[in-house]
Image 1 (cartoon, one colour):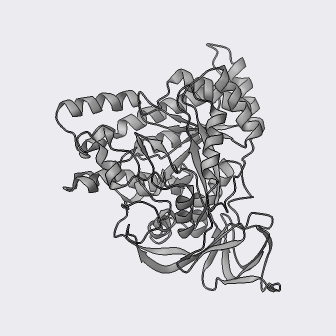
Image 2: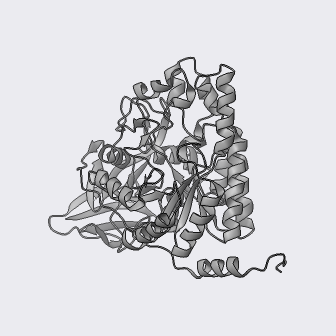
Length: 480
C-alpha cells in the first residue's frame, strides 16, 4: 500500500520543514517538496497542518485485572481510542503475581494484545525475586524484546516490592542492558494512613488523596534514586506528580545520574479539588494513584518538562466504569484505581502546552513521542518522521477545537477526567504503519492490525562502566 501525505509542515523533535511524506509498505520511503503521487496511491491533504510522528504512550493498562476488577478498555478499543487522538503506539504492562512466571505472563498478555489496532510493546513487572526471576529477566531481554521492568513501591500486600528486591532487580537489569520503571510511593506509609482514615470514619473518595500525600511520593523517589545511584543504574520514574519528586529527579540529573521522569497529562491540568465533589461517583471517577495534587505542583511539572528534568508524557490509561468504581462506595481503599486519557493526551498537551506558550511544537513532539522512543530504544524506527522509519504519522490541525466528553470519546468508559474541557489542536488524520486509520472523525481501525514492537537492550559503555564501578569501589574510600 502506498500513501502520500502532501502539503504539510513536517515537525520532528529537532527540525521543521515544509515537505511531503511518501509511505510504502508500512515505511516512510521519501520526504521532500512536491513529491509525485505514485499510481494508485492514497493522498492525504495536510495543507496548513503539521505532520508529526505518531504519539507513543509509554504507560497504559489495557485489560488489567486490578483490585478485583478488569479495566474496561481492551487492546482493540484502547488502541483505537489512541489512534483517534493521534497516538500510534503504546507500551503496556505485563504484571505477574508473586510466584508467577514472567515469561508465561508475557505470553498471556501477548495473546490478549493480538486484537490491538495499533502497535504495542510491553514492560514486565517484577513482583517477586528468585533465581527463576533472574533467569527469566535474561530470557525476556534476549528472546522477547523486553528492555524495561516495572516495580511498584506501592500497593502493600499485593504488588509492593521492598528495597532488597529492587537492589537485586535493578542490578540484574543493569547487567542485561535494560532499564527499570518505578511507581514511587511509600506503600507502608500509604497503608498506615489508609487505616487511620478508615478508623476515623473518613471512607469516601476524599480520603484517597489524604492517604497519599506528596511526602510519600517524595520519599519513595529519593529512595529509589539512591538505590539506583548505589548501583550506577539508570532508572525511569513513572507518573511523577509532585514538586518534591520533580526536584529529586532534577538534582540527581545535575549530579550526573541517569534518571528519567514521566508526567501524566492529567496531572498537568487537574487538581485535588475534584475529590471534594458532592457526587460520590464523580469524585470516585478521579481516584487514581498517585492522586491529583494541589495546583502548585502543576507549575513544577510544567517546569520539569520545559527544562528537560522530566522527559516523557503518558496517560496511565486504566479505566473502570461507574459500577466498578462503586465497589468501594463504603471503603475508599476498594475503589479501583485508574483514569483514562489515551485519546486526549496529545490535545491536552498541545492546548495547554504549545497553545499557552509553554512549549514549542518541536518540544511537543519530543515529550509525546521521540523521548519515549529513545529512552526505550526504538528510535528512529519510532518517534521520527524520517526515511526508513515506520509510517506512524499524525497530521495535526493546530487551529481546530473540540470539547472533550465521555459522550463523544472513543474510550470504552463512562467517565472522562477532562469532561467539558475545550481544547484547540487535534489529530485530523492518523496513519498507522502506512494506513490511514483516522480521518476527519472517521475511525478506520481494524482489530489485529497492530504489531508487537520488540525493544533491544542497550549496550552503551556507561552501563558496563557503572557495573565495574559498583563492584570495585573500595568501602570507606572517598572518590575524587
